[in-house]
Structures are given as C-alpha cells and as structure tokens.
Image (cartoon, rainbow, N blue to C red; front, top):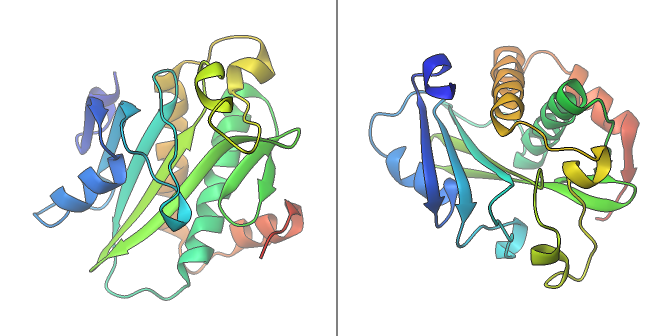
Length: 197
C-alpha cells in the first residue's frame, strides 16, 4: 500500500536504527522525501544518544530532506516536526497530544512519541518513533518515565499504514512551507505544555 503511494519509501522488518540506515543511504543519490519505515529497531536512539525502545507494534519512521544550508536551529525543525506528527495523530486517531519541549509528544503526561532530528552534511533527517499498538510491558519496565500508546489511549488498534501516510503527508507539507510560513512554530509555542531546558 505505502510503496504504491511513495516511490521513495523503503520498508524494513527490523533495523538497528531508521535514522542510521537513512543517514548511510543518503550519502548516495537519495531524493528529498525519502522515507525509511521499520517494524522494529534494535538500537533506536533519542536525544543525547539515549536508548529508544522500539518493539513491534510501534511506528518507526525516518524522513530525509535535502538542504543547501540550515537556516534554522535543529530545535526549530524538531518543533515543526512535532506539530506535523501532532496533526497526523489528531487526524487518524482524533486525539490531541501534549507537546513537551523539545522533541516529545505526551498524552496525560505519559510519553507517546519521540522525535530525533539530525544533520549529516546537507542531509536533514527526522526520526519519529510512536508507541502505536505497542505492548507497554516491554517498555515501561525499562523506563524511568511512564509511556503510553495510541492503543491504550483509544482502546483500539491503529492502522500503521494510515498513520504513516498522514505523517508523511504532513512532513511533505512542512517542507513545502519551510522556512517561510511560521504557523507551525507559532502553534508549537502557544501549545507547548511542559518545558525542560
């Protein structure tokens, strides 16, 4: 289904890290908008090289955007991307998350999604990990903070393909607008609820 919609998408069963995989292939002739999706990650990463547990049932997606030069801080790109994911989740699941500075989405104070933005030469890579239909017993026992999932919040499974399509479409819109239209940053700044600097 996804490959029929996006000719620059690669789906993997398992990978060490979608960001690491995309960073490697981006050294070759990859287009902007190339997407890597994996069913699980064996060495998912968050900010500051923190481990991001990534069992099956979640959505693990990395998106490539080619740039000539970075005109914003990476944290600004992360904020834009948080809003893109926020909108996609709201569209598919009908729930409104909380935005936690600078790279997390929460629901009722529990972590639902983490975003990692990295720059490698002229390759901007946005990594997104969402607890979708995830078995939370595989996550919470290994975390200092509580996690939740879309399944726990909504009481039902979410179609991973539908959510991936919504996120990719929002990211495509984001980079069509960037950096001239600032409504995503305005939305983020008005709605961020928990600020840790």
